[in-house]
Image (cartoon, rainbow, N blue to C red; front, side, top):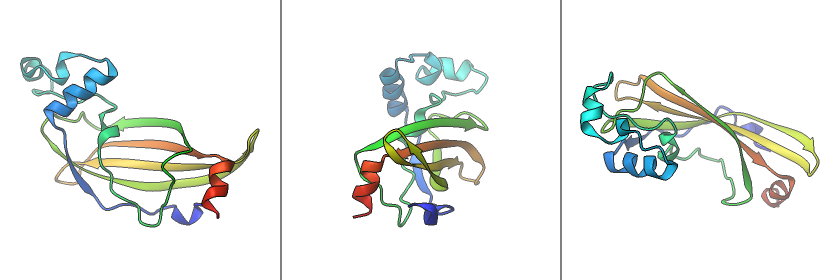
Length: 149
């Protein structure tokens, strides 16, 4: 169903690791470590500045992959993983994009399921990778039927 999307990617979108957004995110996930929002703690840390929580890239805009049309509801969030080259620094600009890495189907208890693997990438202004994340979107048979109408 989505095999023709493998390899497609979005254009890079500029995001800013905003101090207020990082603090709200840390509060929302219940991780109030001062490295995220206390400027003295950040300055005295090995990074010399505040950093964002590891799952913060979930709030970034990764652009649109042209031709990839997924419904707004009915999808199942499968697994997700993050890999960091270095932490995200509060205040920095990050350029993000998504790429379809794989699509496969399996027969399950509820019919034919589709598995769409998408990689998100964040790079700095010089193009150096800061992080990558991989997520799998599970597309149930019911959703697949709606998409093929």
